[in-house]
Image 1: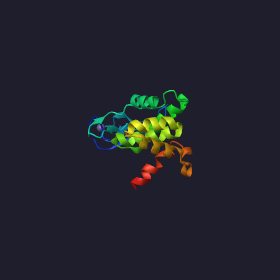
Image 2 (image 1 turned 60 degrees about the vertical axis):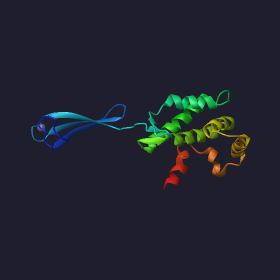
Image 3 (image 1 turned 135 degrees about the vertical axis):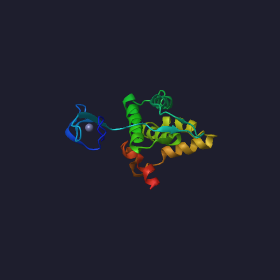
Image 4 (image 1 turned 90 degrees about the vertical axis):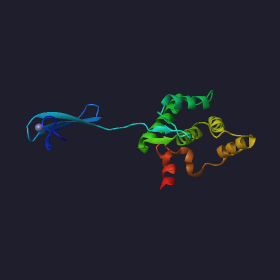
Amino acid sequence: MKCPFCKHDSTQVIDSRVSDAGDSIRRRRRCESCNKRFTTYETVELRMPQVAKQDGSRTEFDMQKLRTGFMRALHKRPVPTALVEEAISAITQNLLAMGEREVPARRIGEMVMRELYRLDEVAYIRFASVYRSFQGVDDFQDAIKEVQKPVQNSAKGLAPSAAKAPASAKKQ
Ligand SMILES: [Zn+2]
């Protein structure tokens, strides 16, 4: 860290302390050349990725839009709001943990489908019908079969944090 006064390259940390909230570190530094003191702050950079749409355009990630998607699919379904919020939070955490600058909209859609699959079968089929733009009755029947087939490896009981495992495994 350069001295902001004399631009000397070498400064000494004389004190470090974590903020009360625990989300930043404050360091007192002393310039080894001019002896002046200054403070630096270190914080974690957590930024939601941009959403890359199929047409090549990008938009900011919109939590409200995600919530609206869930609400529409879950309209009049007996799913507690707390579980919906948990699902939204799981997706948000997954996106942050990916640490990517941008994420395809499709990928987020798949995350929503996975969460809906765990929450409510009807909502899952509703969402899938729009999302995968079902063309006919066959598509619905396939989706219903998907929901009805015995769940392998208790995928249904996966914790939200583990839910991204298949996607990352595929990448390697
Ligand atoms: Zn200096």
